[in-house]
Length: 357
Image 1 (tube, rainbow, N blue to C red):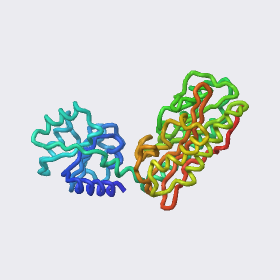
Image 2 (image 1 turned 120 degrees about the vertical axis):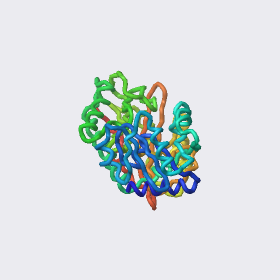
Image 3 (image 1 turned 180 degrees about the vertical axis):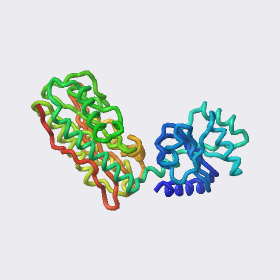
Image 4 (image 1 turned 30 degrees about the vertical axis):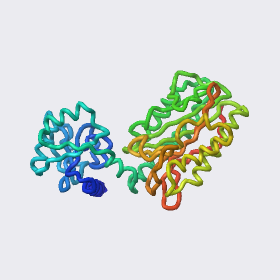
């Protein structure tokens, strides 16, 4: 699996005329090598694969990075990169322009005097956008854990409970059932705060007859899940039911019609047109969804600005919402995989309006 990833990267290097590439970003390094350490660089040439890391990983690196030559670097790892380039008689080096800050670039330029540094954007990310079967299996397990977390937290939510306590309970449950961490800062937004699209849990105490919006995910074995459900504590008012039913209609419509060959813009319209039809278009200000995988936000995007064509193996969220200031908001989100004929839904938590307390 990992060697195939390197092989595909080498094909991209050939197509773009690069002799070698240096990968320092955490997720791209792990994707190519399997190495989970906190520090290291991957150097890929057309004939060799190197993992440069420090003495802390002498044992771990060879165990995880199958097929890679392990180089224990000194104080300045770029000096070791220079030596490897000289050994391979290479005079050009591509680097991840989206992950290298200017101070790094100037330091590298000084150390690699005589080597042409060539900016490259998104080469590994281009590979990561299509998930293989091993990745999809992990993502299914991460989604299953998110579903179990939602089922668990329904027993905890009630009037008088603090949002931060709900978030903590969710995160403890995910960690105690195999997650490394949460995929992002858990969102628990109740009452009028549920109108905040990214209302990270606060000290607010859950009241009665109000929405509680939960947006969370499990970071599991290197991959993210991302699930949103909105419930009502107490008795829903007509406005609660109206907003919820519109968002649910939009989300189900999208899940029914998203298919390969569709653009991100077209997928976004599946939810946006319905919400707009009911007069709430101005209160749906974000995209319908985003890619996810090793990171919580990856390509492609399901938005008004995305011309990316959906392709089998892409994993995205579908998460329309309506947010009414001073009242509350609803978002319903699932994780899906684009297949040859349509989609597979990874998350399975119930979506009928749930009332608690």
